[in-house]
Image (tube, rainbow over all chains, first blue to last red; front, side, top):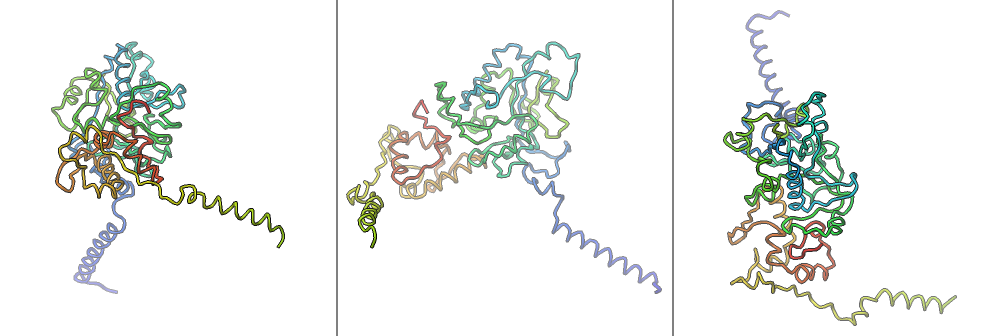
Length: 273
Length: 132
């Protein structure tokens, strides 16, 4: 079959149109890739992997912890007590049952990926305060089958105890061990201790997972998180998206560390060393 | 008929147990619960009113509480604008129970009567009682 130039161009043009149509059909039936369609729309950037230049959200709440100040161990106790009291957190005797919102550990365990046997003694012995990192890309929220844990537009990874079914997928997914399961009724130790409860906050029930909530209930009332209120010189809380916020100022001045950055969860708790 | 005596006795006992609820109360209905509204906070109010009409609250408070819970927790919006346009801070322990500080004589009255056990109190605490 012979084909002159005119015929060829016609065929080529038609093929191009058909090709464009096919792409449209593809987009219609299989929009985006699977990853993006699963959790797109949560944080406003579907693909959101490491593209810092992208226009981010207006509010991105974060915490900077000045660990050098924690040499004075009374501050650690003060911060932990403030959190315990604000959220009616029970104290269990067994480590298997413990419920942790904010707790301490040493450098070696906090930053296992940056092992350094010649680390300064001062840093090695510091108590690092650990809490939920309120990641930008939280694996816990991704695995939760009932959307009990989810990311708020301000960056807080919230936990809805009404919806939690206690499957503990989130605990397996969290690389920071920030989540605790209520194996027993948390009111048992609260009652036994005879603790004065915070009447403004509920307890939890048996069978739900809990974690630090960045004091979302206090922020709603215009207060600072309980740990910040307890030790404002150690805990610096603020909006990362605002270049003039206190936390951005301190992060510009001081060297900061974040936990397990290589996992790509983009934690928003910074350790000032 | 074999064993007439045993069968009849058995039937009488069965009917007796089966109708226990009726003859135990002497045929009278249990008294209608009267939830109390005489808390100090409510006494202080010039015009005694809840966030919505009383009738609406009686019939629909469970639905309203559910919706407000989701609005506060999941949307992060703790301002409820009621049908009259008034703004109300959404919080079970800090708003609802502030006026209704008598959980025993208010919430529990009808819930016990209707035999419902709302799971609110599995986690939420009555802010007016110091112990659990």
